[in-house]
Amino acid sequence: MEEEYIILETDEALSGSPFKQQAMSDGVPIRNFGISSELWAANQDLASAALFHPFVEALAQGVLPKPAFQKYIAEDAYFLRSFVRGYEAAAAKVDKAGVAPSKAAAATSQLEQLREGVLEELEMHDSYAAKWGVGLSSQTNQSPHPATSKYINFLFSICDDQHSTVAEVLAALVPCLRLYAYLGCTLARSIPESEEYAYAEWIQTYKCQAYIRLPAIAELLLNELALHDSAGKKRVLKSLLKVVLYGVVVFENSRKEKRGCRR
Image 1 (tube, rainbow, N blue to C red):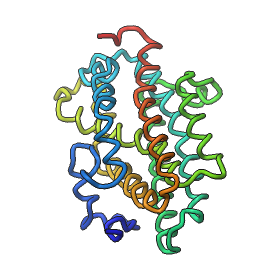
Image 2 (cartoon, rainbow, N blue to C red):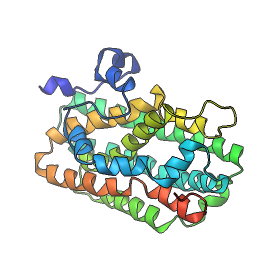
Image 3 (cartoon, rainbow, N blue to C red):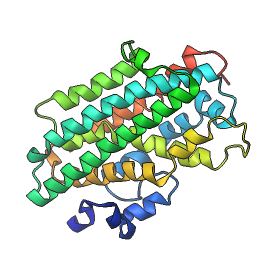
């Protein structure tokens, strides 16, 4: 069974792996494939809560007020910057993961790919910010919403804990990656076919293969390293269960900041 969790190093390798199935999926984890799919199955109610959140529904229908989307872009960019530090912290812990040197090298490579994926997503936010008139540079020095800060502090507490593992750091990151893939793939099936629909580009970004592969990589890496971290498995589960509660926090913050997004 161990070979099923071999960490792939290149995009070319994806064509013959479970990643291929993932890229063509509905944005959900590969079934019966480790701790990540177990937790996804156990938290369908939270995923549904995000999908039917008033902010997401308004976005899907094209009636989300522009100020709410502007607030979301600024808040999410702040949110994403914490992921860069998260992947860097995870990479620094790989040597203590208890895996063979070859797998440690592969894990480091995959964490770098995930970090680069976040940087690309931040570039996308820069593009959206310019298009929607959001000054991200002016937002940098502003305090984020308290709920966003709570999640970021939670993530950083794991990153900075010298006893935490790579799996625990990933456990704090994976739910957010997976949630966006799920939302992007689900919403893309029902968005209006109109040039006047303003949010199609955002939705398509989170259903494209370039993004879909990121949660798949992170989940397989989490599954692999959790196998070598049995002593910390309960902590990993606790991290996952806690972090999914923050899954709609950016949406909720944006909705509350601007009226007009309510049911």
